[in-house]
Length: 234
Image (cartoon, rainbow, N blue to C red; front, side, top):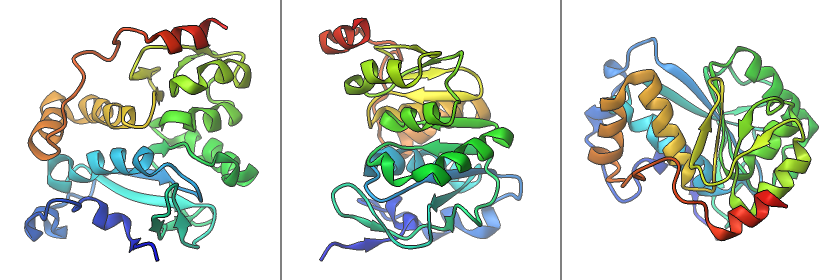
């Protein structure tokens, strides 16, 4: 049997925080609402990485994170971890920040794509992680902007979003409202970038270095790998 976990416990893998850090009394009422789309076959770190960033930022004071799935049924991630979503597409609250991960994206369905489009209308930021860029493409959110994805998907994204300028060799691409990130761990970098935009560089630094002990890339534009370059030039 695979373990059953709730999103709230993802934060505590490998570290137990003092209970007071995330006490309700410490959380102001104006936290940004972060909706993370999950679905059967979702790539675990695609959504858990950004979730960790937003959950722990400023000791839980800055963001309220919740998961949304096609239904309220348990979601089986890629690799078999089971997660119970907080909301379904039908009853999810409006998000200020929408995170769209990759994985078995066919399980999102047409209703999920419509939900992404609807949420994006009022959201301040929409961020795809890894192959989640293809869901943004299907929702029409990449037209006329730059975007990136996992290097294995660069060539295919050019076909899926012909009006988008697909970029290789960047951890994330920020168009203002729409942010796309490269493969898997790049979602952490994208989320830290959002924290830096909304809460300041010191909040992003503390989240990455003090809490997560995460070594951030020296640049969001590292040298382009040979495979990425070949893919994007096809």
